[in-house]
Structure formats: C-alpha cells, structure tokens
Length: 276
Image (cartoon, rainbow, N blue to C red; front, side, top):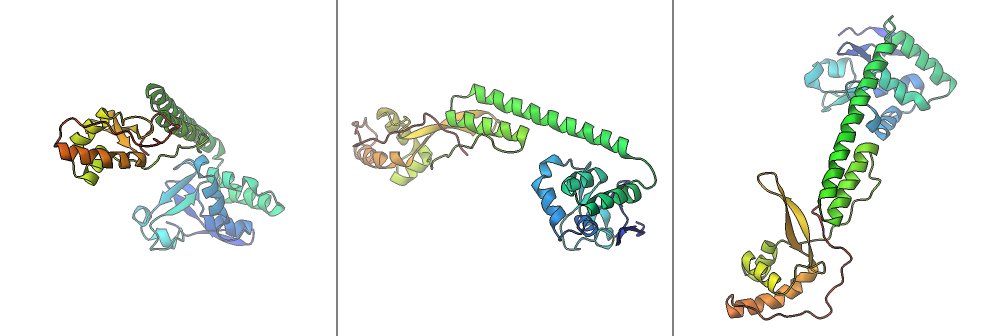
C-alpha cells in the first residue's frame, strides 16, 4: 500500500485505503479535530448500533492486511483487531463537532482526502441507504417472529422475555425490562438432594399437588430435535416440603404416600416462568 501523505490543516495524515475505499482511524480523527485521544472511539461505541459494518466502518486484523496493520493503519501489532472508518462513518461520527475548526477539517477531509479527486458522495450515500434499509427490514422481521412466538405461549414471564427482545431488535435497547427469574431446581436436582429418583419426585409432587405457582413454574427447554417443551421446575419453597415427603416415601419404599400439608404455604404472584 502506498504511504503517501495528505496535509489536513496542520496535520499530516497517511493515506489509508481498504477494499478500494479511503479510510481513517480514530486516531486520525482525534488528531485532525484537536480532540483528546479516545474521543472518536468513545462516540463510535456510544452509537455503534447506527453504524453499518462494511459501509460505515471495517473491522480488520493482521491476517486481513498483513504488515500494513501496524505500518499503515497504525495499530499495535499485538492487537487482535482494529476499526477503520469510511467517509460515511466519518460524517456520522463528527455530526456533533460544530466549532469552526470542525467545519474546516470536515471540508478538507471530504474534498481532499476521501474524494480522491472524484465525486463519490451520491453512490456512497445510496449504498449506505440500501444497506440500512436491508438491516431495518431484517430487524423488523425478527421482531415479528418474536412477537408471534410470544402470542403462542402460556408463560407470562416467557411472553415478557420475547416482547423485551422484540423491542430491542427495533430500538436497540430493552424498552420492556426482562423479568427476574428465581433460582429453580429440576426433579433430578431435588431427587439428588434427598436420595430418591426423579420418578419418585414426580409421583410425590403429583400426589401432593406441588406443581402450583407457590412451589415452582413451567419453563421451556429445547429438545435434541429443536422443539420447545414445557418442563416443571421447583422453587426454594418446595425443598422443605420435599424433605418431609421424601422421608415418608423412603419409609414406605415407594408405596402411596400420605399427603403432608406444610404450614403457611408461600404465596406467589406469578403463574409460570421461563428459563433465563
């Protein structure tokens, strides 16, 4: 790659190109605009959801560009990756730079550095708009699928999880908060605690009406075939109940157990749950 220099204001900028496009680094932007080191990177990270990969920026590694990774782009040779910014990405980054120097630097970078003597603005903007349209359509489709699945399930918490992720697809953030899921245990977990089988736990639970909201909730597990199936899991509140009932189960060697009702059974405000 040619290491020619272009002067922007009082700064000498090494010409950098990638996939036929002129690009700059965060360090170049900070230097030209007289900003503190890291200012451009911070603004990019704060708004990254609005930048389109391979349109507004590229993420490159040493394997992509060889020795130019450090020699031309100025990245640490030991760094795993580096980000380079295209013309459209640069213009998005510096929207909030409104001082006199910023306007002058933008004009010089666009006309002297990025254009390479040719007017590329129209084609660049069209490509970016098409890419953004495709991305937004993809996010909208994903959100519709999530909402459709939410309408088909009974679990209140699972509905909220799906709805929360649907809003994130559209807006980039969780406008609907994710529900808090309490610690829960499978029948196998409970069985291991008290030295009985998972089958015994199921029989005890059914005989004593323990599959209710006070003691657990339904979660959706994925089978090897990729199907979602409801599975009952138990809360902490069920453990002392099983402690009493499993002792009686072991004494009777699996014969029908006598129903033991715990004192002051806990109240529940949720009907069902979902695994996080």
